[in-house]
Image (cartoon, rainbow, N blue to C red; front, side, top):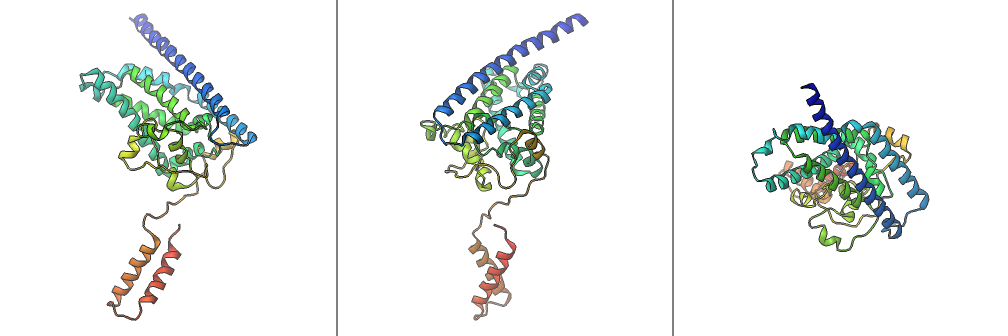
Length: 315
C-alpha cells in the first residue's frame, strides 16, 4: 500500500515537473522575442546605462525569487489543485466548458482585487512599490517583484484554489497566460490597434499609465489579463503619462531594492475629488449660516473659509 502511494506521489511530481518545465521554456522564448522586439522598436528611448541597470536588477530579482519561493511555485500549486479540485465550490457546475470559463475569470478577478488592495493598503504598498520604482519600463520589469509580495500572492492563490476547487490544467493555463500578458504589459513597445484591443485586454499603454508617478494615475488599470474588470469597477484610466516611477527615494540596485521593500513608505495622498473652490464655497456658506445670513460680511466669510481650507488641505 505504501509503495502504491509513493508511486502516485512520484507520478504527480513528475507530471507537474514536466508541465512546469514546459511553462518555463515558453516564458523564456516569449521573453526573448519581446526583448528583441523592444530593442529594435522601442516606444521610449532610454539611456543605455539606465536600461542595463534595470535589466540587471530585474533579472537578479527573478533569480532571488525563484530560489526563495521554489516551494510555492506553480508546481506546488498544481500539486495542491490535484488534491482539492474535486472538493471545491465550483464542483456544482456540471458543464465542463462553463466551469473552465468561470474558473478562468474568477482567477483573473482575484488578481485584479489583490493588485488593487496592494495599492490601497500602505503595508502592502510597501512591498508592491518595489515593482513600481522602475523608471525605465521594459519586459524584464515584469519580474521586479519583492519576494514578500510574491509569497503573499501565492498563499492567496493556495487558499483560493482550495476553497473554489479549480482544475490543475485551468490553473496552469491561467498562470501561463497571466505571465505572458504581464510581460507584454511592461514591454517598451507600441502595439498596433491597441486602442481596440484595450476594450477587452490590458495592453502596454494602459499599464504604462498604471506605472505613473502620480497617484491618481497609478491607482488605476489593475487588470492582469482583462480590462473589463477596471471598466466595471470604475478604475480604468486612459491617458498619456509623462513621468514613470515613484516619488522620493528610489534605489535601483538589487540589494537596496530588497531592503527598500521593508521601509515604511511616505504616504502619497490622493488629490481631493471635490474642487477646492467648491470646498471654500461650502465653508463660507456655513459661516454665513452661523450668523443668520446677515448681509455685509460675505467677502470676509469667503476670505476666512479660503484661508482655513488652504491651511488644512494637502493637495
